[in-house]
Image (cartoon, rainbow, N blue to C red; front, side):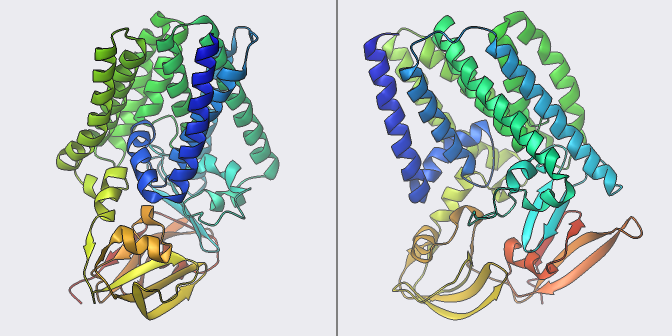
Length: 440
């Protein structure tokens, strides 16, 4: 590696560290970055975006600073540990559903002491428990896996964490190995698919479309023929789960195709010699990141209601008029500002829900910035209903059955605030909904 390349990598590392801080502090920057990271790993929270930016920054710094050959064989170790983690995560999900006597494809939520977490086989969150044990000081922990901690023996969580740490180390070493012995295209694929596979070991699991394709590519980076043949077992194991889940099948195919397109265009961008074609492929990636979410919203049922970056951007840009009264939710306290006047608020657990009157015309983004609201979770309800119902089925440990629960909560309650009315006891429920009753 030449001295010029090392300087460029070091500059890229510093730029990415700066961009991470900017994305964390300025939601507009965070949303712009999340638009691309959503292709790799879909999620409501921007945490995957921050992790990807830090991951990229650290890799650029390591590649710039590593001069010695680390040896070979790390790609096999990385792939093996990732597969083991995914197998363990799937086993934990099946064990949990078996404990409460429901089918593997059921949506299950766990609630305890104002903490909420949900999981299902097609997108499992159970492995988040090994991180949840260290999240006691994190400010915003909604659906961060904290409630699952109570279902584990602590040494199991520690062992899971150590296994994940070993996989992270092997992925980093495999990337350094690839940079030394393989071309730019393989390096790009190893970096992207290594990240995607690792993140799904914690959030999403094996049955996510991006995870399956990332495993195929990681095998192909080692041996192209192995990657080609692995397509069939991956699809044969994933397709039945997609068909049985309550997620529209078109959604899974769309995410798979979007990720595949990104990998193809990215490989073309880093591997081609022509500057004009490289520029064209880069423009194509940017264009696809903007246009494909629009297409998804038009063709996938219910896509407009999901927490993708595109939907969050549309939500952020929604206008709010002067003197309009809206309902807002915040983890923490709310006070009057130059933009809003509080009309009444209710606090429960860590959350505060309040009606506020706008003193000026603004947007959802402007109001979130003014009050410090968590934009990514859609914390503003511009037209709250007169009545809101919390509806779910609660697991009864003594009988081993689920009992329907229907509870009236404050009008317009968002999910975070609504579930706080379940109290502080530990509950396992099926899919939980906070339903506005606008006819009341």
